[in-house]
Structure formats: structure tokens, C-alpha cells
Image (cartoon, rainbow, N blue to C red; front, side, top):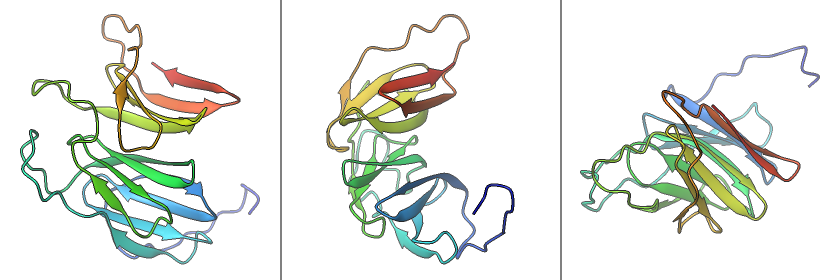
Length: 171
């Protein structure tokens, strides 16, 4: 693979695949319209699995299908984050997942969890929303609220990255 020559691979199902990450010698892809996850060791042969559905009645109206908008690998596990409810999902191997209901900080019923992304760095996971709300976790399951970004007017966060010891948000 040289970044110049590309091949097309057929995935085992057609979902609205929203994010991909690499870790533990595996590629993992999540979907924002289903609980399905794909994983592969070579990027050519893919296996399909599923994050367990929401089975408890929660404050978000019992969303049985979470909208997993991003996934990251860090600290020996994959962590996916949903924007349709307060759920996260964790996996050691990309194939077996644990759903964490109401995992993200409860900001009240009027708050929309419009999550832009999740990153891992400096021994923590960071989730950021479009309106600049920042959440952090040391295990991908229990989350705390951090200092929000100083957005003004109509500014919105569009991306989050971590590199060389720095978290970087684009807005």
C-alpha cells in the first residue's frame, strides 16, 4: 500500500459507515444507522459483528439503535460513541462489544448530544460535541465534563484530533 494505488473492497453489508480506526492489528468500522460493526486484520477480508442493543428504558427515550458516529483505539480497547443517546461501546478485540448505556454525562433532557468525534491521547479519551462541550474518560465507560471550548456566535466544532501530546479541535 503506497497511498497512490487504491483498490475497492466489498463490505459484508451496506450500512451508513461513519468512522474507521486502527488498533491492536485490526481495522474497525462503525455505523451511524445501526449497531453493526465491521473488523478486519488486513482491510480486505471483513467480519461483521453487532454492538448489543439498548434494552433499558432510559432518559433518551429507549433508542434501540444508537448512532455510533466515531470510534477510536487507545489503552488496549476500542471505544465507539453514539450521538443519538448517551451510549458508548467498548471492545478489546473489535469483535465482541459491550454497550455502556447512559455512559456520557447527563446534561439534561433539553441537551442534544451532537457528538463530532472521539480521540485518545495522554491516557484519556476525549469526546467533543458540535457546540464545544468536552467530555473525558480514563476508561471509555465513566465520563466527566471538561471545560467547554470558547465558541462565539455561530461557530461549531467540526473535527477533533490528537497528535504529539496535543488535542486539536477545528471550528
